[in-house]
Amino acid sequence: MRRALLVHIIVASMAVLVLVASAAAQQPPPRRAGVRTVTIPISIFTKKELKENQTEEYVQADRLIVTEDKDEQEILSIRSVANSPLTIALLIQEDLTSTFNLQIPEIQQFIRELPRGTRVMIGYIRAGTVQIRQKFTQDLDKAASSLRIVAASSALAPRSPYDGVEEILSRFDAVPSGRRAILLFSDGLDTSSGTNPASVLKSFDMERAALKAQRRSIAVYSFYSPTVITDGSNSVLIGAAQGALQQLSDQTGGRAFYQGMIAPISYVPYFRDLNVSLNRQFALTYLSTHMNKGYHNVTVQSTNPEIKIEHPKGYYFR
Image 1 (cartoon, helix red, strand yellow):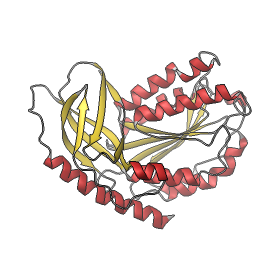
Image 2 (cartoon, rainbow, N blue to C red; image 1 turned 135 degrees about the vertical axis):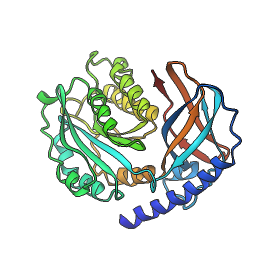
Image 3 (cartoon, helix red, strand yellow; image 1 turned 90 degrees about the vertical axis):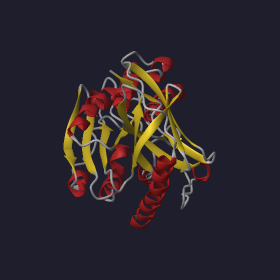
Image 4 (cartoon, helix red, strand yellow; image 1 turned 60 degrees about the vertical axis):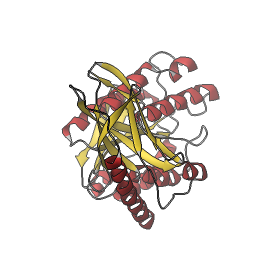
């Protein structure tokens, strides 16, 4: 695992050299009066490695192009793993089934093997609140040791797991800006508007959490795991809840992980892919020429057609 992580770091270091050179070679559009800086997380892959699930040793990103509301913007910097340590919060839904507890050692191992300098927080989403087990710390062993078993009780089920995501987002304001992420272990079921699959899929709380995550440049990586409520529920409802998690991750530049409609047998394959994503993640800063308040659509593309870039679909400026 450590050897694989080292390879990923080397890959990311090579990739950032290409990216910085690409950014420097761009011909930026003329600056206009009234601009502001925007930082978003991006992850860069080849389409081949995403399809075949095999990491490429070298990624030729060529020139990157950032557009905001269809207008090309000027890239200021692209920071990698080495010069932009990761700040990461693990959020665990309290009413997950007890099978989740069997995976705690794997999660602890993942935390302990994160790159040095990573800040980690541990929180549990419960009815009405988030219990913080560990504030942001660079002591990875301390963070890993703060994990505990879930209660696996419907009495502690939150109204919506996305309330917990929204609550934890503000805690990132106290740490330096840079690469940020949330790992959400949840069934994705928001019951605030009932259990109609259509309302579950288009959760208002999820969309609000996504907008706030975009505003703070925080990528959300979601891991589907059933709760005592959704375990054995109808497939349509579970599919809608998974769809909501997928939307949250897609809109914030993260990724959704799930294995059908059952609890994962092991998180190790997920963490293997996640390590690649995190080590391929960069903090991209650009100049926005749009000063108007409201939602702004963002796209990031490479001139290399074989490159796939995961990034937030936009952000809300106020």
